[in-house]
Length: 128
Image (cartoon, rainbow, N blue to C red; front, side, top):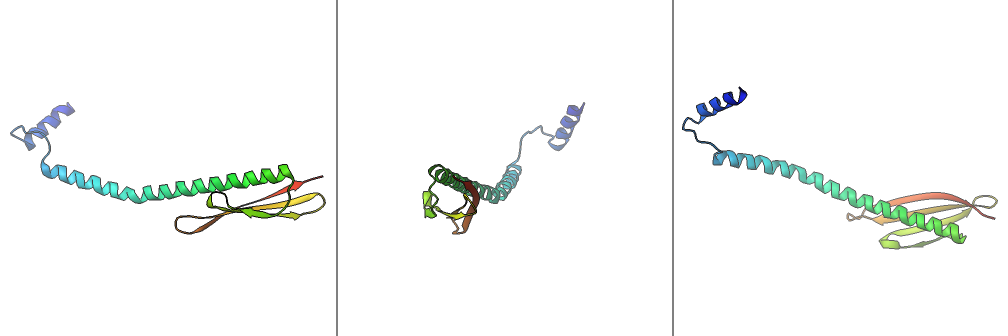
């Protein structure tokens, strides 16, 4: 029933029985599609920047954890710094009571816009 109504409507609009789209209809639909794509570009750029930042934050957390494990396993309670993967990793070790050390680790890196970012972790280690 609905299909019959649609066919009658088409016959009234195109009495000669021509079917298909006109060039103007195709061009208008392409412009609408292009505008929609252009509106998505800022979203895609933001997504890429967020993924890069998340990757750097994950790498920083990995390097911090690796240094914590190294200090705890070697009992080398001295402060220092190094530069893994273009980041700056600093750590300070402080006496924090009887047989207790406070270890502060910081990873610093610059993004593509030269903005500085930091990850800081504070942990405590007891020793004999």
